[in-house]
Image 1 (cartoon, rainbow, N blue to C red):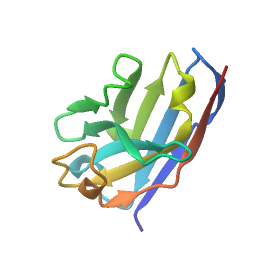
Image 2 (image 1 turned 180 degrees about the vertical axis):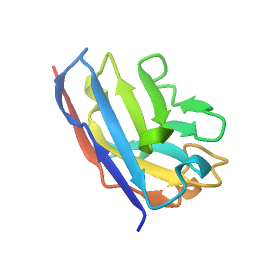
Image 3 (image 1 turned 45 degrees about the vertical axis):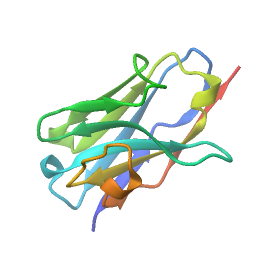
Image 4 (image 1 turned 120 degrees about the vertical axis):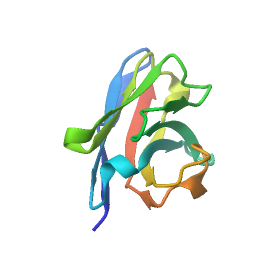
Length: 124
């Protein structure tokens, strides 16, 4: 079975850091791109970052550029999202997703599989 297990969320003060992990299983990790999305209360889900396992290309939403870093560890089938300088507006449930034909990194339709979310709460 395909599984994407997101973890690492929690409560952090503004300006702090968190690292999210997305552990993948049940598919050939190197054939897929992994994306991170988030959904804040009352808002639509939005793409945050994406990494292509084939060539390690990375993509970031403008709102997180310079603060978030996505990375991949093929040996562990895990993708990380390092989040620094967190802001109140980063509060959301964060989801990871996997897609084998990701042409639009921040489109939900690009992804075949989705994990459960992990909650990130940034406090003042």
